[in-house]
Length: 135
Image (cartoon, rainbow, N blue to C red; front, side, top):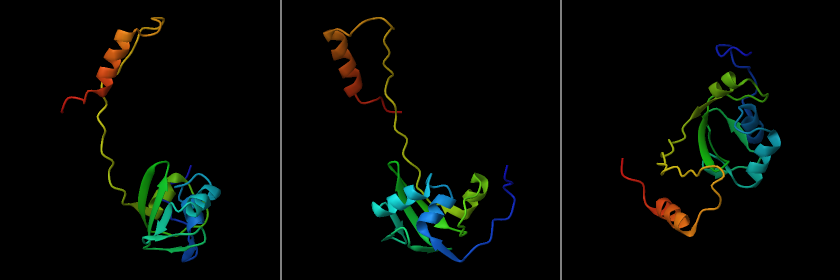
């Protein structure tokens, strides 16, 4: 296992944005990072970024992955993938907290109870459409 207190590997002063996104584990593969850049889901310093856009310490990267937008500041440039504890030290996460959605009542039916009747379906629809009580 990698030691979180271990020094970060030294590398060049700049690197490609797709390589950095992969190295700090924001994307699973480098091709996923390049595809996000091609799709316009990556911005560096509020400018659309291509995969080959150079990245340096102090840049702000905004990447939209899996329906959420992550905003990170680059604190260390690396080009090779490192362990997760070391990768987290290469950026500062500025992503705002997501609002918590209140979950309505959980609707369960007994196993083997068959299809709901018309009356049951109307009750289920009423439960789903009513706003949850204020907390």
